[in-house]
Image (tube, rainbow, N blue to C red):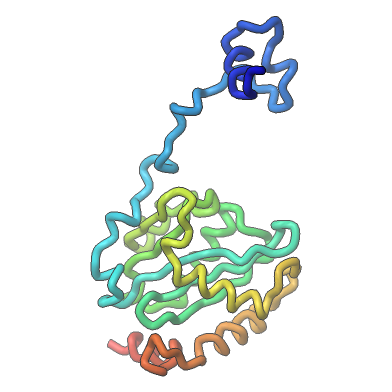
Length: 213
């Protein structure tokens, strides 16, 4: 018995007495070959593999990671920005969701809270919500990096931090109702916790020192 892929190939090749647009759920008249799909994700994105050693080894402050915490039914979100040296985090409410235009607005809100000398770079996954990343480069002169496809763990700091946010904002929560003051309170608690990885200093203490020039 032929496999599903063989049937699809025969259908699109015209070997069967049927038209794809009429008998397939997706109604696509043409199909791109699987081997032709880009295995490296969206073309033209600055890859995390090119990120300088000063970012990777945390020897230089001002490099950030970004991610979203998604609310009920994917209709609302919180954006987290976390600085790699101090582990300091900024939490931004996004009651209208995390489409690309909303993500850009959230990023601008977060970046405006950061001193200019600490806005050096930001690392994303390959989610489509970051589609306006080039606008950040133009406006803030940021270096921008993207994880490899299906590898969000490459910005593991913000991924691990999401577990802490979920204590405050459990899965299934409607994040549209989260007040900025409540988000800031949650961030202040997490930023105030002493950590062994920081020689038992808190992110808030280290970040405050970094902001002084």
